[in-house]
Amino acid sequence: MASDDGLQGKVAVITGGASGIGQALAVAYARAGANSVVNYFPGDDHDVQETVRAVEAEGGKCISLPADVSSEDDCRAMAQAAIKEFGRLDIAVAAAGILRRNPLSEMDDEAWNSMLDVDLNGVLRTFKTVAEVMTDGGAMVATSSIAGGVYGWEEHAHYAAAKSGVLGLCRSLAVELGPRGIRVNSVIPGLIESPQSLDAKNSLGKEGLDAAGSGIPLGRVGSVDECARAIRFLTSDDSSYVTGQQLIVDGGLTVRWPS
Ligand code: NAD
Image (tube, rainbow, N blue to C red; front, top):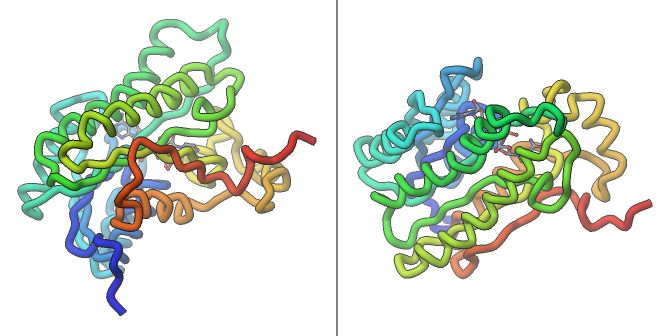
């Protein structure tokens, strides 16, 4: 039976689509009949062709291009690529992000500003430029985090500030773009196994993730596919009356009574 989630034939721009949650999302869209434009960040070693191949294996189409969300022009180039290649742009997901560990004593302007420039300002640039060409009735989702979105995290004040800021940004754009029928929501991922969380220097690393899993009500960390499918829901007709909201995708981590 054909799906009624409204994603068939839609086109999505996904920042951070060369790896992790963004990559899983491009594949999730392909399964739903939606095509995508993803970026790769030239400073990172992710192979964006992995995303393209995985999408094609599902019968979808995926255009990749280099883009840095620190540049408004690069963000606009992603939106324009959707129009040029597919003739429309219906969905934007800001999944690009960085994570750095900096104790307060080392939190200088450079560390603070470079984090916010990607994790907060990058979302603004993405949504500002896609809004220029997005179909009325479209949908946007940004990735916040339980760090900032719910909890504090020592030695990550800049990351938490950026991820907290993402929530206010999305709520405000939900109001501003509502008259065009464009919905703007956030996801708040908990512990999701991905290149970012597997980085033991700046995040938990493999051992830290394994240890944390037992403290989560569902007994494990989440997969990028599980997070991607929650994002897909927020950009589908299944959430057509949901805007300005945050969906926590954490296996119950933030509702557990402290033990
Ligand atoms: P990831 O590191 O695989 O994905 C981040 C992507 O962003 C990478 O492809 C990277 O190349 C890209 N990127 C980095 N800097 C960029 C820039 N300046 N311009 C364009 N792209 C850039 O990790 P992930 O877990 O998939 O992260 C996706 C999003 O989810 C991030 O915003 C992250 O903060 C957020 N998040 C992840 C978790 C988790 O547990 N994995 C938890 C909470 C929030």
